[in-house]
Image 1 (tube, helix red, strand yellow):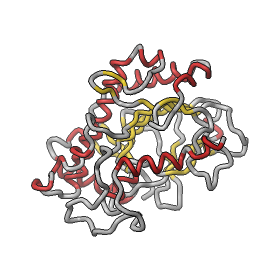
Image 2: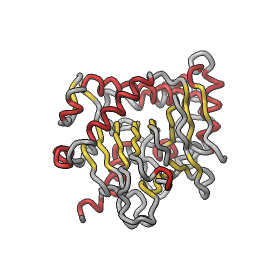
Image 3: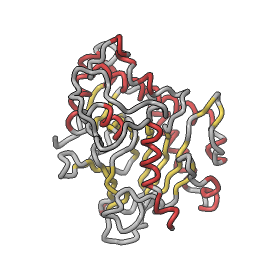
Length: 317
C-alpha cells in the first residue's frame, strides 16, 4: 500500500460492519489509518497544543523538575530516548512529557504548574482520547467477528478499562528547530513500532512522520486537517496472531521544514496490566503467535520490558 487510508468514523454507530471492514483492511495491510468525524472537538485538540507549547517554552530547569521515572511519567529531555539504536548515532532530537490518567479526579503524578492550572481540561482530554480508543477497539472486535458469548463488540474495550491499572499515557512532543547533533542526519525520531494496542496521533502544522508501508519503502503520513492518525501497536499484532500489523515509523525533518518547531500529541492506549496477550476467540485468527519463542506475557510485563530497552542508555549516560 502506498498511502494511508482515510475512514469516516462518524458512521460507525449506524453501520458498524461497513466501518469495521474498512478498519480491518487498513489494519491488515499498512497498520495505519486516518479517522475523520471521530468525536473530539478540534477546539479541544487546539487547546492541548497550546498547553504543550506553553510547557515546552519554559526554561529547562523548570521542565526537569518532574523527570521521567520507572512509571513512564514525566519529562524526557533531548536525546534521552533512542528508538533505533542499531542505526542512530545520537538519541532522538525531541523532548516529551508523559501524563498519566486521573484517578478519582486526581493525577497520579506531580504535574508541572502549567498543566496543574489546567488539570480539569487535561483530565477531560485524556479521557476523551481513551473513549475514542474504546470505540476503535469496538471496531476491531466487529472486524475480528468475535461472538457475543466471548465478549462480542466489547472484547477488546473491556480489557482496556480507564479505571484499571495500565500503562496508557498521553504524551506531548516537541521537535525543536535547528538542533541536529549531526547536520547530515534528518531523522529526529528513530524507526520503531509502538508498544501497546493502539496509538492516536494528533499532528499540528509541520509534517515529518513517515511510515514503512511495504516494510521496505517509507511514505509520508501527511497532516489531514480534522483527522486523527491511528496505528496498531505490538500488543495488538500479538493479540491478533499477526493479522493486524504493527508498522515501523519514524520522524524526519526535511530541509523545507528545518526552520520550524514540530509539535505532536500522542495517546498510547495500553491493555490493563493483568491482561494475558494470548490468542483471541476469533474465527479469523490462524492460531499463530508473534514472538513464539517467549512465554505468554501480560500486557504490563510486555510494556515494562519494552520500556526498559528504550531507556537502557539513560542509566549508562
